[in-house]
Image (cartoon, rainbow over all chains, first blue to last red):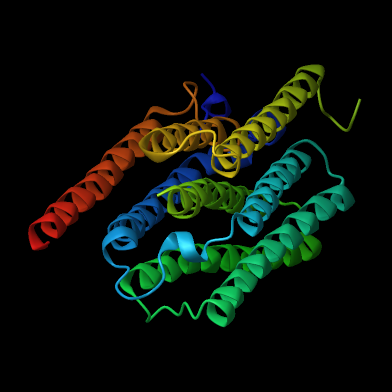
Length: 210
Length: 108
């Protein structure tokens, strides 16, 4: 079996760029180790939240009192769409040298990501202004801001990372190393979307049902 | 035919595009299902929690399969890494919830 036929998780460059594919094997595996340790970090925050949201309400509001599902639904759709457009960007990168279409998908991804962060910040504003639900009010709210804030911070960092790579694409062109960097960022982005599934289910929906 | 892309490459490309579309549609349907359960109060109490948990799990699996492209064809090392991490996550989350709930019950 040729080296470029050995598959790794994520989009494989394969025969479209055998040289970068061989290099990808090691680099993508290393990045998966980082992704999985990041997942462990989030699982700790989820576990803390699970305990705090029931037992740490203190004199503050409970999840049911303060969560509004409509913006959460919108945020979910925006993040899902951005994950999809990033996927299309990677396919554009893999199969064609059409820089303009690639730039279009990446810009759209970045804008959707920024919209997501903006919507979340607006949620925080409403919580603080209308419900007086600050992080220091109760253990539940501390855990809530910590979990969702860490996720929002990850998305923000990913947007900055995307801008840096867009600049590299514009100046260096779609050369091997830049391709591999974009592929790693795509994995990170998809991963954040998966963590958000946990947040909208176990934080927001569970909070309203309980 | 586009620059240097063979017909097999083209076939693979449309297959990969279909994967992303499948992922998008599945995620969309499962998300709408989750929110509908709560919005229209299709279920309440523990039954709702169980159904929501299952829907989230299925959606995670769908996104891992169609967006992250983790499947049976992937490299063994990567699969082992992902499975091992899932085990760690299960122990951390399960253990924390178990211990803290127990402690909470005893302090009542």
